[in-house]
Amino acid sequence: MSALTVDVVAPDRTLWSGKADSVSAPAMDGDMGLLPGHESVLAQLRPGTVRVHAGEEHKEFPVTSGFLSFDDNVVTVIVGGLG
Picture 1 (cartoon, one colour):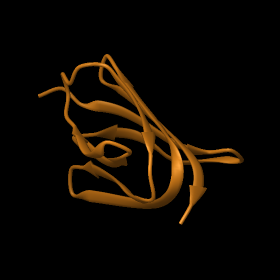
Picture 2 (tube, rainbow, N blue to C red):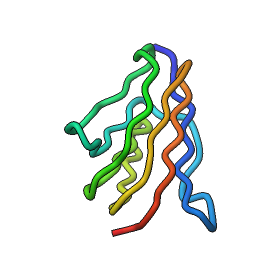
Picture 3 (tube, rainbow, N blue to C red):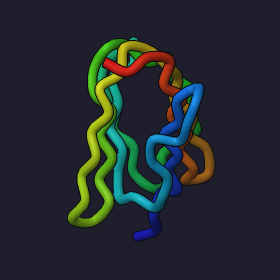
Picture 4 (spheres, rainbow, N blue to C red):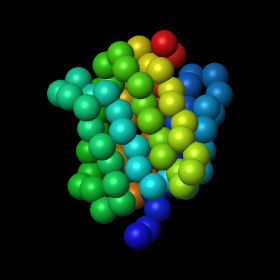
């Protein structure tokens, strides 16, 4: 299985960047899970937790707002506010 290229960024810094197996995020329309090969999506985030799973490493980012972009196995999470 191919990997996702993930960047989780805040206005002032990069919170995490690397390869991951999956990403889950609290979108306005409900929780979403992203795996390699997912169709392109742009979503607004609601308060909740963005989770990045990279092998044995699991990162969690509590967010209050933001956006998520997914295209061609590249995920960019723009955090508007950290919770």
